[in-house]
Image (cartoon, rainbow, N blue to C red):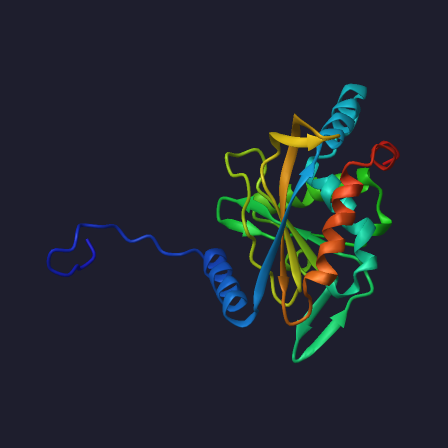
Length: 235
């Protein structure tokens, strides 16, 4: 039994794993060193859900919603080079390849696999890549090289009770997108209040590099793309 101070309740000690220690150090340095601010929008994802359900009924590989978000971000981020960038050593490095990282929960903590050249991959290729890396991550076999090189990261909480959350930037990146639970919510469509499947998208950005005038258009483009039936159907 570990020694304890007088009047301190009994306790057991559980050592932090190396992964949890690394996560703690990385997030601590991000919060301390990066001036971060947040923008949030409620995205209508009714069309996205319908399109994915259609693919599911057709059989074959069914991309996750996260795969769709990766593809959408990869499609528009080239128009916002400072969001596909690293800020370090007093410089902003605008990255040429579009590599998108995504948060993957494991028993030991959250890892950040990378989809390399995501803009050049089809939705099915992104889905295949992400599934492979999730399997490697949860099996403790994800190489460090597969967690490097991303210029932007997506953190999707999935089907939970959490409507929205703020993600912490993964240094030296300049932005991260947090996706809350997709569920039916009241929305105004054509001046009428209707129940629509939607998701809160929260963008965290590095204020040294970006401000609202640059990032608001990004969110606007992303929301429009996710509700574009023509674009979704041709993926």
